[in-house]
Length: 126
Image (cartoon, one colour):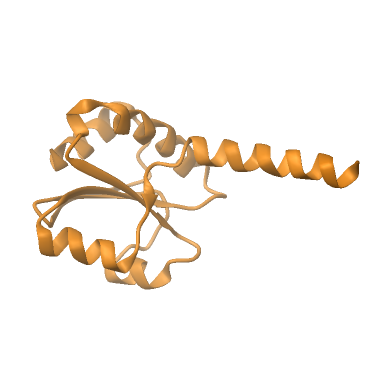
């Protein structure tokens, strides 16, 4: 019974964290493709322990549903495990959002949780 209960508690944690995931996990290959193929993307630097990141995730998840962003890919970069990509992108802090348009970085912000500011930031990818 205990393992059954632990399974469902673990499942609840998984579902809760994945509901607000603000994009698919990014790899070095995908980052290179953004730049090489001139894609538009929003990269959210996330840490599970970061309350600011969680707030940003909720907002970005809503943006992802908006047809206005149909040509923009949303990615999530894990702050605690993807150190090489953090270095490549010159990111020093979790809760950083980086916007690419036509394969070039056009904007970035750290720690912003206002929906209007994040909308203005991310619309630069469109």
